[in-house]
Each structure stands twice: as structure tokens, then as C-alpha cells.
Image 1 (spheres, rainbow, N blue to C red):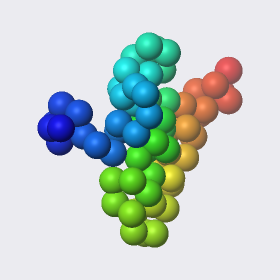
Image 2 (tube, one colour; image 1 turned 60 degrees about the vertical axis):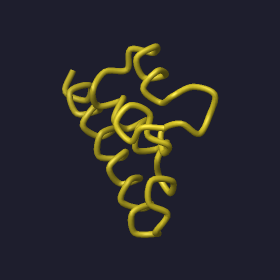
Image 3 (spheres, rainbow, N blue to C red; image 1 turned 30 degrees about the vertical axis):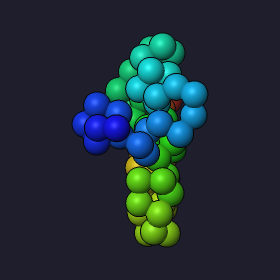
Image 4 (cartoon, one colour; image 1 turned 30 degrees about the horizontal axis):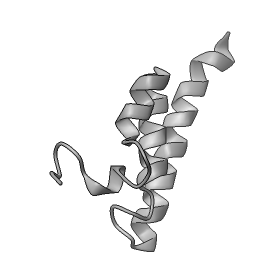
Length: 71
């Protein structure tokens, strides 16, 4: 498996994370949130990196929410 084409930390289930993101047309922020949620604790199993990936997912979700709250 290639770390560029099919990195193992994005291939734990039946489909790649990018395939799900594209299929659902999630866009940049939600796509990145999903990406970080799916790789949390997998790409780097250290507690620090696991927490960092979860915090990144939260950051992208909050960024997606900002313009919605202004409506």
C-alpha cells in the first residue's frame, strides 16, 4: 500500500475515507473533520497525537458552523 495513494491510516473499513467524503459531497471542512476523526489514534497511536487529531476535527466542525450561525 502506498503512503500517498492509499495510506493505511485511511483504509480501516470497507472503503477509503476519501471515497466516503467524495460520495457524500462533504466539502473541505467537513471532509477534513471526517478525515481526522477516522485517523485519530491510528496514524500515530500516541495519546498526544490521538487528542490532536480529535482537536483538529473539532476545529474544522466549528469552522463549518461559523457562517451558519451568522445567518
